[in-house]
Amino acid sequence: MKRYLLFFFKNYFFWVLFFVVFKAIFLIANHNFTSALSAGEVLKVFLYGLKMDLSAAGYLSLVPGVVLALMPFFPRVAHKIVKVYTLVVLIVITIMGLADLSLYPAWGTRLDSQVIPYLADPVAVVSSVSNMQLVLSFLAIALIVFLSYLAYSRLVANGEFESSVKWYVATPSLLLLTALLILPIRGGVDTSPLNFSSVYFSDKTYANHAAYNYFWSFFHAVTHNQYNENPLDYMPGDEAERIMKKSMVSSQDSAHFVVESNGKPVNVVLVILESFSNKVIYPLAKANDEFDTAHGIPHNYFDENNAVIKNLTPNLSRYCSEGIAFTNFYATGTRSDRGLSALLGAFPALIRASSILEFTEKIKSVTFLPEMFGEKGYDMSFYYGGDINFYNTNVLLIQSGVKNIVERAAFPLAQSAAQKWGVPDEFLYSRLGDDMKSMKTPFFTMVYNISSHEPFDVPEHFKRVKGTTTSDLYLNSVAYTDSCFGAFIEGLRKSPQWENTLVIITSDHTSLLPEPQSSVYELSSYRVPMIWMGGVVKESRIVDKICSQTDLYLTLHEQLRFNGDLPDNAKCYSRNMFSNADEYAFFFRPDGWGFVSPELGFFSNVDNGQRNYIFGSANDSIVHFAEAYAQYLHDDFIRR
Image 1 (cartoon, rainbow, N blue to C red):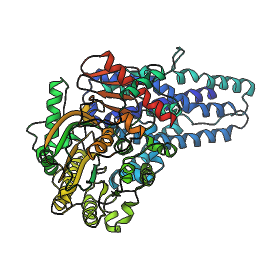
Image 2: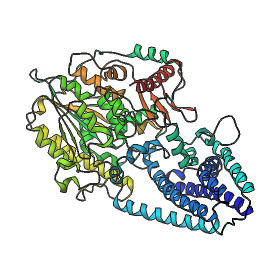
Image 3: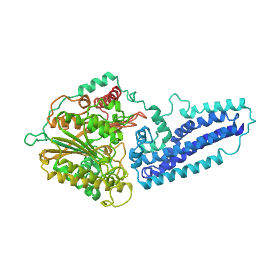
Image 4: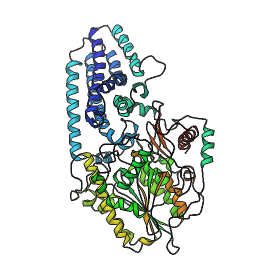
């Protein structure tokens, strides 16, 4: 009987030790963040995080506990079942653990349900990493699993189990012990079960994140990702709806900066840059530095003497002074689907769900931007260097009436296979430039590049930024995209179409790169470029107004003088960026939501209930509106 009890406890604490060791690996792998912690804070990461490690070990010990209770009846078979179970689980959680520590620098969050949509497209997942990273990952998985299973076999599952033990003593005892695992799983006997706030101990976000157990985080996200339940409950639903309806508009008067040529409808080219932030476009980075300094916001990415950033994107930097550049334009999320949902559908990102694009049945309820152009007789097209099926982009486009979709498969194999994600930007923009010469006017065309997506494997002939770090590779990819896009614009300038074309340059989301990386709770992690230029833009100016990706819909509707009513998604979440409408922007993450206005910026964490003010102090009326907006958005999503 002692052997059975000893096996039970050794099995449980094996998993505890495994997670503690993986926590150390996480801290080492993310040493750029860990170096900012003191020795005491690192120790607290382990101490406070132990609760989650004990809970995760409890979950993984349930099956062995039940099998162990039945071992007196068939000891050899049960022993083998436990060992096979352990090996399979080791493989799975090792893969999860390595994915967790790899994704954290880019996502700023521990492993959660965000990763599920990517699992449906493993090719896209593989495309995000280099071949060397893939090889190293497989080697790391094999090494960790081998060493862990070797330790398990020698220290836990060693020896044989006698069948002479009395089952009526062993089985009830082991079942009782298995049932008692609910205590570490639940986090003790407190009224409130274990949650993320249970391990919060620091005002440093990374320290708290490092204390999380990645398996617990993922399991919790999956089991609590109730898309039909609003994660926010600040006020009665009808009050939130009343506040939102009061702020809804069908149109907003403003000056018109888009001037038609000879009364002809304006052609529109919407350029969506992959993973571009204001940090890599010098005039915008400088303007943001001035904003942050004026609001007392600490920053760590801008350097007036940084020659790399000054010369990194010369074309985009020049376009800021040639057209209309918005310095405080915010993305609503941190992934591509969230950017597309906001830019093309005027529908913000979400907390629990990544975006409405995950749900094909809900996509039907949104009227996307191309539909507005389709109603006016525009010829519509979409150019993308990758796989158009990723994140239901194809569904969005077809529903919107876009018939001319040029994607990875439309390019020669030598071009479509030149980068992990697909077609390098030089070929993408060249194809668009050639096709535009024969486009039926007026046209609305969208182009979405991929070269600045991980793993930043731009063609070898381009090497403006030396170095092999991830930060260097990112900066080089950004410079490459800028050069390719610049060549496209110069070609367009020379064409007769330029005089009556509006080019809108923006981004799907930012990157936390370059080093030193910004935090996902900093405003710099959501500021993306928004530049209007072209022959129809007759004056240049810098606009410091705070705007959002969702505002593009109504702004275009008004600037192009389109008649007709707006869809509810645009009425609710879109404002005219050139009007005197209230200034604000929202951004959403799996752990909460952020808000920024001229007077106030904050982030509300739904995991621990804390609200952290980025600048300004609590203003009841502003906060109440922000809460109503965030709550109504998720009610609206559920109803669709």
